[in-house]
Length: 326
Image 1 (cartoon, rainbow, N blue to C red):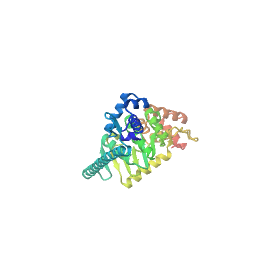
Image 2 (cartoon, helix red, strand yellow; image 1 turned 30 degrees about the horizontal axis):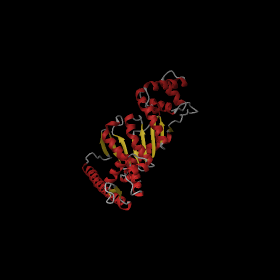
Image 3 (cartoon, rainbow, N blue to C red; image 1 turned 135 degrees about the vertical axis):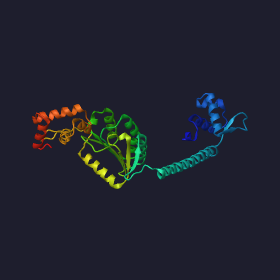
Image 4 (cartoon, one colour; image 1 turned 90 degrees about the horizontal axis):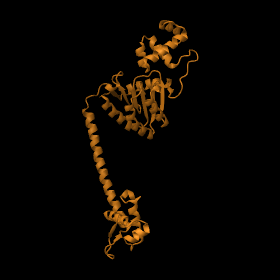
């Protein structure tokens, strides 16, 4: 315990021996403690620096131990004084930070009618860190195209801290991330730590919501790295939360196999593909929405046409509608 006051284990042992055997010199202490005389002298130097030993008046050339009720009490007072000074420095630093934040808020000119615009990834990362450190109840994340390895590494420390505080994590990915090793590994780590992760064929736009009070959404959904909007307005938050809940309730836990519809034989992804193509979307656009490759879209569509015994996509659309698949 005395190590917190700067007293090493060896020095503490020597100090105790000097208290127990006031008449012992260096050689005697070395023998009884099975230490070298060099170690004894080094420990005595440490004890002298801590003012726990003094020169003996009765035995010239030797040290005597200062009684603990005096020496250790003085050490404790010195450490308390250092701690008080440190606390005063921290209080001054906290006041400075609070003042800087307030000045930034007073002079910030990027606030719009619906929220604060954050331009660039640095600004987004700074705000995510602020939201991550202050969240106390829940963290919601929707990531349609998964996350880069760099973003995942940046998220891990904050997510770990939040999980340790008991924050509930709910994260939505697209089904396509099941083929992304980095995102899948991160998702499994999150679930093992107590978070929930689900996937769906198609998701609403990317968003992060903390404590149902702060949300970040991309300014440009096509390029989330351009910037984000920090939303705190209750009406917009409620709309985003409803959008999330709808997607969450239709998603399945990561790792669970997606089942085929017993009536149609379609998976959720295939049904969504039919819907997208039926709305006039091109193969390329449908692949982008589903987060899969163009080759995958064409392979799935070919499989659907084969099951419908259709010679063309137009015929496949007619037959799918007639069967009630759309």
